[in-house]
Length: 265
Image 1 (tube, rainbow, N blue to C red):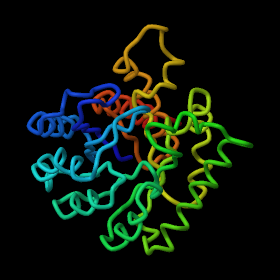
Image 2 (cartoon, rainbow, N blue to C red):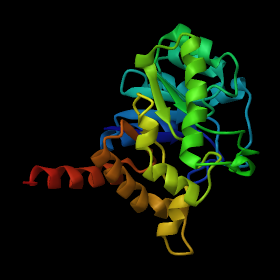
Image 3 (cartoon, one colour):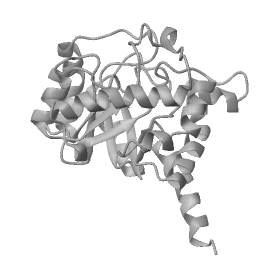
């Protein structure tokens, strides 16, 4: 299973905003995550938390360019962006994967850009943007069936634009136009998303729905234990990958499951 370590080159991400905003700090953090066991680094310059400030592609690229350029060649790099211009710049600078939290909905040129670049593309389910997504977490019918249907619609558009099947990875979008128990339901039924025929990335790290497993008063960072527990379960269930802030905790959790599997009879 791929372990995608998160590198937020932002001042306003929900759990670690500002810690890695300086390029040199982000680069050092990325290398630390790789040393801990990350197989992919997901580098982003814009927070996608509810209410976050949106950036222009130029502002976004200015933040992440030196980080991608420094780490290119050291590890597989995913660029966390919904701007086609940023995606192109990142791939040309040495990134390997495009991770689009809007699934192609934010930029009408994203699919054609990805097709031309010929690189892996993570197509995530979501609705709206950071300003509106929580208000759009209303589903008229079975939640997972609707999420699957909406993902499928974007998937067909991506394929029609020329993105190869072998380059598509799906993400059910935990926390994106989903709140509380909705996230738990999507997580519990993620295998239904896999039925579309593509690898699935799970992005549960430190998200608000994990608060159901925590004391009333806690910080987002204190959700790392719950995050790691989910990672272990996802390894058991065969997910393609997990996207996490605390790589060391996830590596340890997965190792527990692996060790137990070795002694099963």
